[in-house]
Image (tube, rainbow, N blue to C red):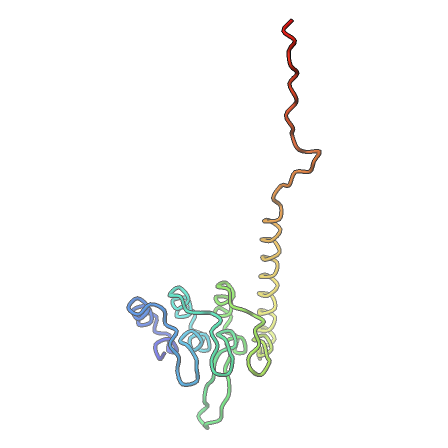
Length: 166
């Protein structure tokens, strides 16, 4: 967990090779992927995803890696730090490219986009959603364009006439 949150790619890579999927949870229910995303450690996020970590895993508050995770401030007050909120744009793109659900609400009913603190992060998030939806439409259309022959387009073999022998 500490290696993921701290961005120590070599350590995370070694642990992923040794233990496989790193979906262990801390006391708040956050996975290493959620902590790495919250901290903006894109290299670690990629290693964890390649190792099979669930991009839609949720912590105790229902937050995904796109939301982020639970964190305690120095004063002890509970506040949340989110990948989308703090503009970790590379992390957001990596999670999107690997199929993270962008409209999954947390326990408070908020989706990741609603936590964007900056206009830039919000616009970037919206653009990624639009790009993904366009890709889905194109993929579904490419599958639907399989030719289906209508009755008039079919080639039917012509009947052969029997020869009379003359």
